[in-house]
Amino acid sequence: MLEVITELSRFYGIVIRMYSEAGVSHHVPHFHAYFQGEAAVFSINPVGQMAGVMEHKQRRLVEAWAELHQEELLMDWALLHSGRAANPIEPLR
Image 1 (cartoon, helix red, strand yellow):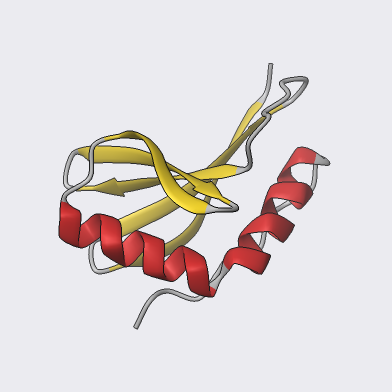
Image 2: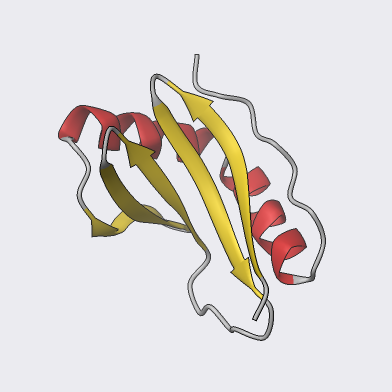
């Protein structure tokens, strides 16, 4: 299976990525956040940490960013899972 890894945004040392695998059905739209060796998975609607480890401060930054960009995240999810490229999303400032 072809796995597509897309970096959507980067802010305050946090990297946001979304993954897509051809032929694999994901039931919950989500994205991955990485910070200094930590990794967590966040659902998009509603925004919330589903798995992994993320320090409280960074988790709150990721959640705030995702709330601001929820519609864009859902559009990127749909694009990736239809075989198209996702669009970058503005970082948290």
